[in-house]
Length: 142
Image (tube, rainbow, N blue to C red; front, side, top):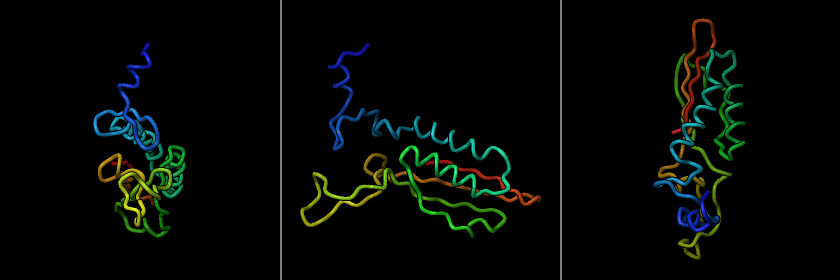
């Protein structure tokens, strides 16, 4: 069992309290965590779908449970026979307000991820319609 001093030496003091650090990622968005989130998303895309929007809404619900959101998907976005889309993710609605380095006449307004993961995260969705008007859907986070 770890001692309290050992746990403190593995953490860094961040804006929201203690956050364990592994490399340049906070624990919540490390590559292994993103891989696990992608496996959750992948379970909605296993089979050919009659209504791909229902799978996207289920993906949205699972991501919402983790505090991640993306913009609304237009109902006319999947009318072609194949294509792909990319939606930037925000963590807990993003950040707004002041930070230690923010000048007094400016506000911090971002996605809540870019300061943790360089460039932020995006949900990439690709689709392809079959001969029977079903849809093969693939989705992952990068």
